[in-house]
Amino acid sequence: MGSRLTYRKKVSEQAWQYEIRKKRERDWLASGRKKFWETLDLSINKSVVKEVPRVVAEKIIHEYEWLGDMAVTNKYYGIFFGNYCGGVVCLNTYGHTAHGERQFKLSKGDVTYFARGACVFWTPVGSASRLISMACKLEKKRGARLAIAYADSDAGEYGTVYQASNWFYIGLTDSHLCPQFVKGSRVMDFRVFSKHKSKYGSNYEKTLIKNGWIKQMSNPKMRYVRILADRPHYNVIYKAIQPFIKPYPKRSPIIETNNNASEA
Image (cartoon, rainbow, N blue to C red; front, side):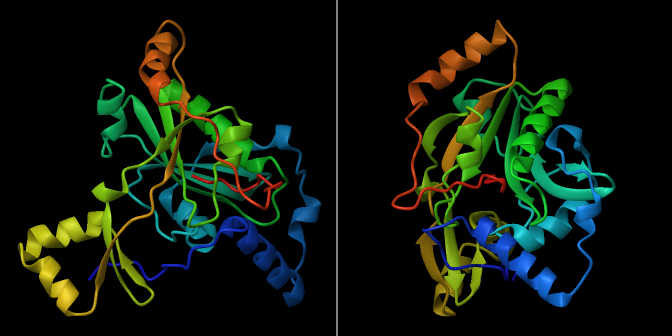
């Protein structure tokens, strides 16, 4: 039916990516495998961020990302320490998700969407910030004027890495626009449902519910934006987003101190 098999229970006290990195580290050490990263120069300023094939991004995203899928993405950047890729971000750059363009009066391709991202357990603190910052610079060279990223409180995310990089927080997405269907450990998001509805007809939703699927609204995501354009275009875009800017959301009661994971 096309639904993901990686639906996870929501978390609240700590980012899921932080917990999964700790688990992967414990598993690695318990296996007795070589600590190859101890032979690498893990200096952040010597790391290299470059475009990578989708297959490289998939390996990390499927293992470390809470949602467990690649979303609608077409461009991928990785951060490298020597020959080892320590993290990736997955972007939508072709305007398939056009909400940002319409809202801020930009053209197709002006916005780059950070849809997925994660760093592996052995990367140093600051890797995610470096990866996102350099990816923004590369997207700016491509011609993008605005970057939009998301944080999901169901995954214990509050956008810590974006707050540390001075992105603007512009509130929550509209969850009523993105229903999903859940059955046991499986979830079918709005994109998959729409595809099947167009294929199987208007009774498809009723058939799902009859077969035990439960319709619910998706969790609204926190939205962060970063202006990539130079002045005077910067000023024009800032004027468009200024009415939406809000104070940063904060985790309570536990304050996250590790920003090594990309909360894209």
